[in-house]
Length: 71
Image (cartoon, rainbow, N blue to C red; front, top):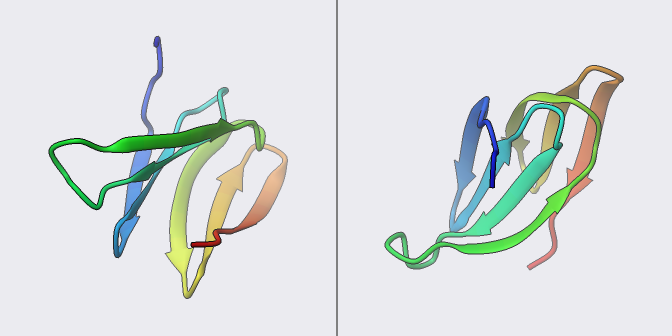
């Protein structure tokens, strides 16, 4: 899909990929051999993302973005 991955952060069974100008992508990795894409979210140019408790902190060109992931 022409996606460049800048960083990956993982917590429990969720992976968040920072995709530069595309934002972030969230994957369910309950089965690591068959990850399920939960969507691409246009949060701005995403450099990196890190889990902080149950939220994801995303470092973007526009500043810090906070994403709450619900089960």
